[in-house]
Image 1: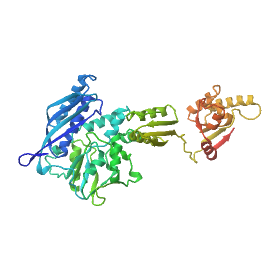
Image 2 (image 1 turned 45 degrees about the vertical axis):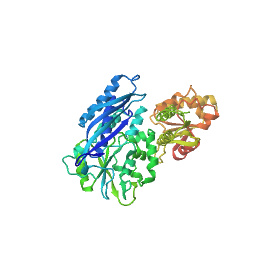
Image 3 (image 1 turned 60 degrees about the vertical axis):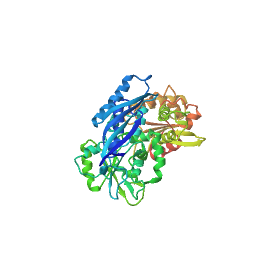
Image 4 (image 1 turned 180 degrees about the vertical axis):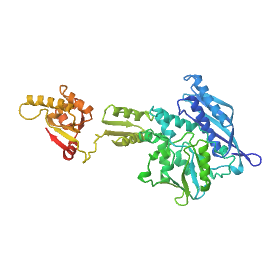
Length: 299
Length: 185
């Protein structure tokens, strides 16, 4: 983040991923949505981007590369981002990412911390992309599930745009990516006097993701996240409320949803705005509490 | 199965295939915790018993596909037929064999079928012998639960010859005999 003249700030981010979908055009779109998300997460608007690509030119046809780039270009265009250029290197495995630059205002920057007691936590997209893409690699993910996960990953987290004409104060915001839901939620109460009470039943999960997790299609990152975070998690889920394998809470997400904190009386309006914008599974998954400092209690 | 060096999710796929091919007991060697965790998850979702040990970074996992024991409902009045011999009745074995054949062939056409058929002692030959296993295969297709005594199969060296029904044990068989409506032949 860089302060420019007056109230405005310039923000920059870089993100790069390996393929998680078979369709190159879709993959390109996911990369752009994923990279641009970091700008939206700060409450800013993305303006410019540069491509960074690693591609096995000697193994794969150039057509694949142009499809990937077309996907990135189109998604960036949808977000109003101009791709100014980029850099490609030869590599054994495809990697594609973007450096994205955006602008915001100092007095309206969203940060990871900032929640107060009584505020609510909203998650805008379902979780389970890591598990489904692991199953996809094994050829075990059903097509309709792949499609719904792809749709979600391609969807821009453009909350700052959606809120342009509304006066909802976003108290804190982050996106759910590689560290999974729990670790990203923990980051929101890091060095605070607060804990989060999370309601398992309210957490949106991709169809079939639970079944695939139980079948053993869990990426290694999920176990690492679980190991790291479990001392900070109090599991008080009753048997009836335990409707999914808890490892889903740690599943690394690609282009996951936003975790948004608002005052309770703004929550319904925000949900309405999100649902109208196509975030059909957005829901209030928990609230900030005074007890259990820096811990998440799951009920 | 030595699955060291294979990236996830390949080991899960391999194990799943092996079990689907009918292997009931499997020892798997893997070299990372993710694979271990995923195999344990896979096992517990399918009622497969899994034990594992770790030595010098190598994980050995023993997977055992337990025999599916169907729950018996006391109020279920399905009949259990208990066949403890390949012959029907005592006396002349040749006649007994013919009678059994005729009995089973008639049973196929009967409007009332037993729910369970238990085969013990020389009765297990009925599910193995090529010359007389067809009626039992048909009964199995028609939904009759055929339980074949595993000890008996072993005794007669017929473990690889089973052509109809499922291998069972005394524990499971006893439940049917005690709780069900049983007819011994």
